[in-house]
Length: 67
Image 1 (spheres, rainbow, N blue to C red):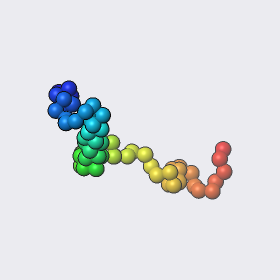
Image 2 (cartoon, rainbow, N blue to C red):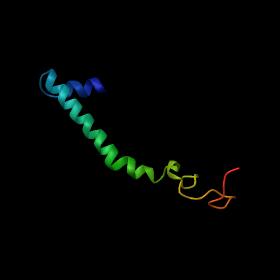
Image 3 (spheres, rainbow, N blue to C red):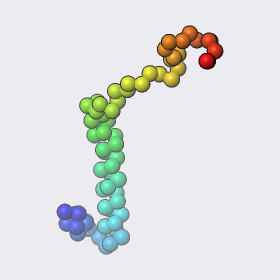
Image 4 (cartoon, rainbow, N blue to C red):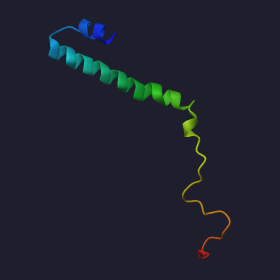
């Protein structure tokens, strides 16, 4: 499939390489800008189970010395 796509690009070898890189960059751009953000709402990776770093630790009052 990739060979067919590469052969169907017009021009000499250098132009074909540049066109293939431009097409690849366009595909990556579309994935990063539209597809992955849309899919992230369905991903469980955004559900955090850790507490905030600014929250005080449970079980001891703030300002008490460590043992």
